[in-house]
Image (tube, rainbow, N blue to C red):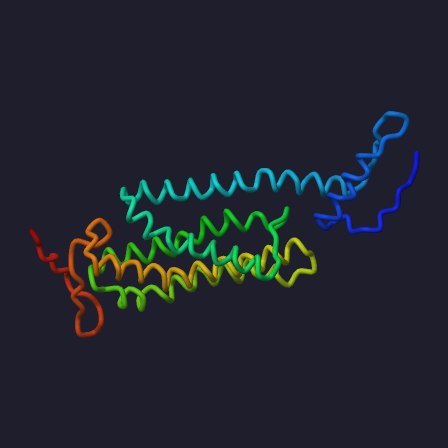
Amino acid sequence: VGVIYQNTSSIKGAPARRFSNEMRSIIIDGKGVTVSNNAFIFSDMLIQVKKDGVLVAILGLTTVMLFVFFQHRSVLQTIIVSAPLFTALSWMIGLMVIFNMRLGFFNMVTVPLIMGMGIDDGIHFYHRYREEGRGSILHVIRQTRGAIFMTSATTIVGFGSMAFSSHMGLNTLGELVIIGMSSCWLATMTIQPGLLLLAERFNIRAVLPDHEYVPKANGSAETPAPAPQTT
């Protein structure tokens, strides 16, 4: 029986894995040494998270996309609805690289969370656009921006409060939720309207409503007028 003193952190990924690998490589009299330390548990957990995290993210994203597709029954509409989510995820990954943030055991939950809640913004915006009709994008932005902002803000406040935690895992969880949900809201208010404007410009019928937007004097919409028929 012996005692080994560790001069590195047992709760940081790289030092914990390095210490675990070094200790498990010790051979005495042809036999491996049995070592007990919380660094080994933490290291094994990180390895498992890294192994399963990618699979969980792929399964989660695939499931979300299937639900969106089954609702709209159109590949193009699915792309329009999910574009803000994919844009937000790319922004979040880019900011993680810039600020040297990494996914770990505690903050991995942010990935399926942002996928599941971030897609809502795009769904709400697109459905309102379909109800209002062609040419209603500015009206839809004015009517939905507050509600979509509040749905994102409540999630940011709830989970983002963890950013003030002294625990390294919990505070990065809060920071990633703030970045991810803010990106989802911003992408919904910018990327999705831009795509819908392009769809109107090039008359992509699979994406567009079947009626025109007719505003009233007070800013609300009248009974939709049928879209002009073309041959």
